[in-house]
Image 1 (spheres, rainbow, N blue to C red):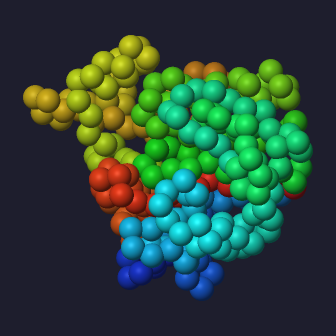
Image 2 (cartoon, rainbow, N blue to C red; image 1 turned 120 degrees about the vertical axis):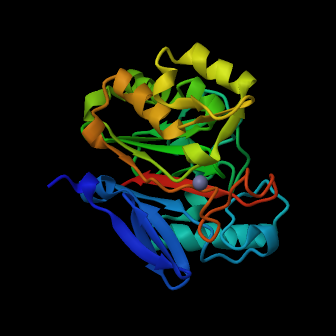
Image 3 (cartoon, rainbow, N blue to C red; image 1 turned 45 degrees about the vertical axis):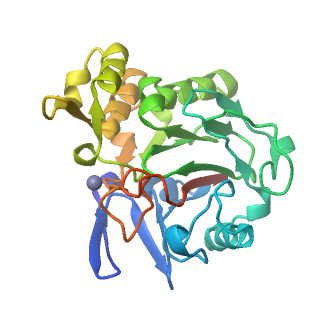
Length: 288
Ligand SMILES: [Zn+2]
């Protein structure tokens, strides 16, 4: 049986949620994991939701961003809550500094705590990779696509923040290439999780963005459609899937959560839905 075909179902706040990611609920805390990452036994990881935190107002409640105008001690408490649930020391987190670019940073023990307990020199970086056990990576989201990567052969991990710009820059593939150059990773060995983010029907773009997709993808018609005179819709999950298959990642190793951040308000923050006034979700991973 292919574990990727298993659907996890949970009733969250009276709404039934189904996903190919596993949905975990502990008291008020809700987070997601990728089944084949779990069964590898090699990593601690999760994608956060907005449920189970201490923040209030637009950040209600599990905002994980330290760079918004939320109360810092609440955000620290939120990071501690979710990291404790998966067995990670939040004080060791290594934070990205995302700019919708395609820079990939190799993280080592020397980076532990950067951006959380000490000053960081990790700037303008949208993807983090490491092969060092005990070094937790974290990247931030509110509609953009989180891409989790695990190379179970060379024991290395990566996180890529793939918004629409990052997707046109093929940051997921560049992250795996960097893992190949640095750790000897083979794309065909990699397990990949494509996490909660904005789905096609909620992601409307105009001609300027559509043209950038056409310039980046010869096969853009496989994931982008005209909606009306002025608008297109684009399926970022499919675009990333194409990007990954192009470099040799096996489709059977790719798990797409299928959850939209924009139309699951009870579960996720969404930049587009909340017109920029919203909290941040996180992808977190650490090699055991
Ligand atoms: Zn949606």
